[in-house]
Image (tube, rainbow, N blue to C red; front, side, top):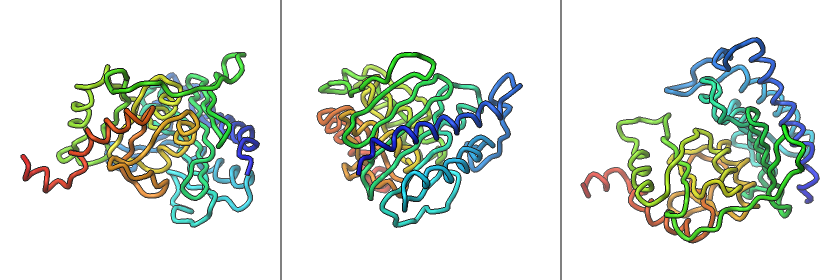
Length: 285
């Protein structure tokens, strides 16, 4: 199938969805005034998330016969066995938009079985749009500029010591047993520096564009990474779970994204300790 033909209408759908942000923040001096409710500890959803989810769940299946949409904001189709699955995060980085930070994105991914074949990540606050389709390479463009889209490629590096790393704190899980900060400390000792955006779709896209070399998170849902994964794959990146097994694009699990094989191997070696069951970790201590 020619997935490149789908890119243009998918981009248009993302741009149309972004209009919801403007509508809901009109007249407000900060996006924090967006209508918000709590989903769980430190986890929120806004009216914008729900509006974008509803729009994309209707628009995307019309682009590809037999496809279904899995959205963060809807359990519908979560266990679908359809071969072609749109996996979307209406707003990746909801906490950021609530507090007025620009690191949030509309993320759209398409998988064929467990292979990422199309991705679109739009950052409405900055106008940046990252996209890719299988076999067509990865692209970046800025909607606020007249410059045409440009091809992007991962940074060439042999070790963490050459790289900026995008980290995740895993904020929605028990902070008494959460070892994410320990992982960040271990990586920080080896890399140039660490950054935390709180939006995996952006981090994957930044690695694809050569702005960073690694992203890792202990618990990540498919909608957090599906859009960025297709872009990173086409840009030459390497992805897996912390134990080296493939990303599933279904259940929640650990995620590791790297700019190349050498860095991926170094990260797998470093993460090996953190893949052990907690009982083993306690015994070793």
